[in-house]
Image (cartoon, rainbow, N blue to C red; front, side, top):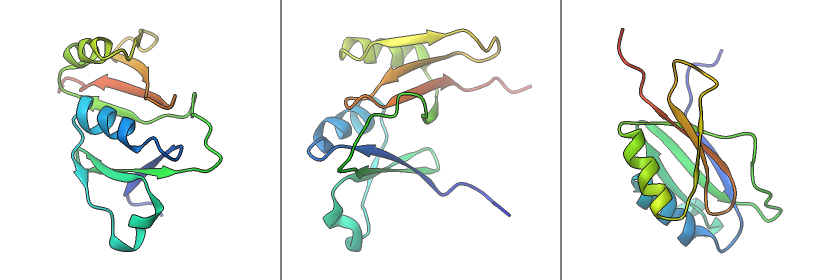
Amino acid sequence: MIEGLDHIQLALPAGAETAMKAFYCGLLGMPEIPKPVALQGRGGFWAMAGDLQVHFGIDPAFTPATKAHPAFVVGDLDGLAHQLVQADHPVTWDISLPDTRRFFVADPVGNRVELMAAKAAT
């Protein structure tokens, strides 16, 4: 039986690490963590999203994920939306779920990313 989620992996094309780190580690504030020595030669990088590891791996046959996506919970959704727009990453607000404030944005290589506000405690 599944007991939890260890990490997610997002793909990027070779040579896109700098732009992806600027987006995920810079704009989204995910701290970069060291990859194991045995995996460092593969390129890419690892970061943390809360307690979850996010692995960014090089895919030689890269195609952006425009439907499948991670959904990250953020504290200041409006502030992050403003910051992304200012950095030329347009956001698309979604109101289809009445109890969820969220928007979508494309990362520098075209992968879809959902950013959502934390739900209020009941």
